[in-house]
Image (tube, rainbow, N blue to C red; front, side, top):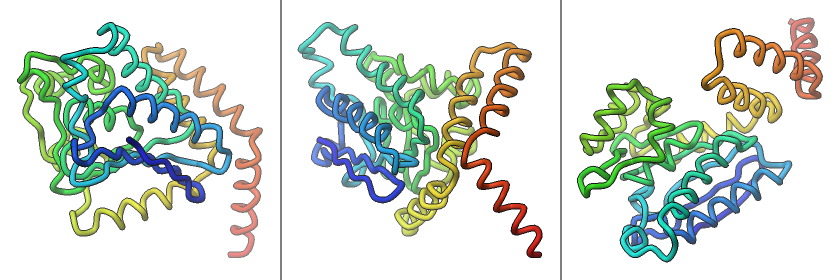
Length: 249
């Protein structure tokens, strides 16, 4: 259902149901959650890359399970929500590499990542309304990623948008030509993996911790993070390296 591989500082989670356009089954959701924990426990991993096998990133939830649930609908929905929460709380950056289509729950999985890289021909969308459904759980992340009116149109219009349009409204970080996508993603994540693991983790935690805070509380949270990062080995080594390089100029 998924493939997990940790190479150096990068853990790769590959959705591996290409014949189903990587539709998310219950088994896959559980496997992704387990892979997240595996990467969190691995001190050599600095970031995670989520990608899809085949031509599409992910077509969404497996509708055969949605229509014929093996468990209570609320339990099933909460499992997806708990995955998104685990991604938001994960101590390491999570990057989505989107090619082809990312639709419904697949768009939700990408939106739950910290960064989205997309091929130029990629499409992302929330077409649930077209079958009388709604992108209920992902709306939490979508509303934070784009403006209110864009989020509303995506949720009730149900039409997927191209990668460049998604980038223009702030939903996607980077768009690369199709022919260069694989190499561009490798360059991007390799460069990011060289950054301080503790600094990236603290920055991610601070950024999401500020959701819903007052201005004063957010400033205090920033001050606490500032003081904490000064005690880390990465910061001390970084300052020492900076000072040595400046002296050698």
